[in-house]
Amino acid sequence: KRTSMKQFYLIIWLISITSLSGFSQRFEGGVIVGLNASQVDGDNYKGYHKPGIALGGYVQTDLSQTVFAGMELKLMQKGSRNIDSLATDGQIKYIMRLNYIDLPVYLGFRTSEKISLLVGLSPGYMISGTEYNDYGKFVEEDQNPFSEFDLQGLLGFRFQITRRLFIDLRGAYSVLPIREKKGDPLWYWKSNQFNNLLSTTVLYRLDF
Image (cartoon, rainbow, N blue to C red):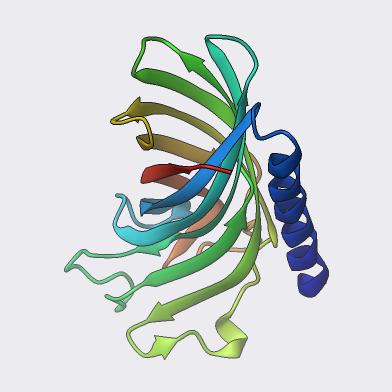
């Protein structure tokens, strides 16, 4: 199932690139690189303490002078991390590492010559999800599976620095739980869990 989903995202990306060759005057695209600061609502920790990378590419087209539509394909590292010195039920260390392939689609609204507002949805497919405590990776009997699918709403701003260089500041939040809590709360997990993400990326436009 994981292989078929990976193939699905690859096909979508290839279609996007192929479209650019036929509609180069209407479409633009480029590469994306940046950093994520994330937390997971529903665990017992607060704060955007889990860093991660954002890496991929984008394509977009103008719908009017002030509105444009875009799509991205990105590797996104998300999760949660406890940095408190206080133990929870004897446990101090807790790290949740989640790796996704995300496919954000969005509308951009140019509010000025250099600034745009972004609104959209970001479906994602989980490549891997692992958790760690004081003793290392959770043993198999303590592991609880995550949903393979994530859907986030996104809101952000894009700032144009030069003709080719842009900076995105974005927030995203899961519309559906990435993991549902069943049974009594655990020392690291109290309720249904949702990705909560802040992302800063640099976009570099390429000529096609």
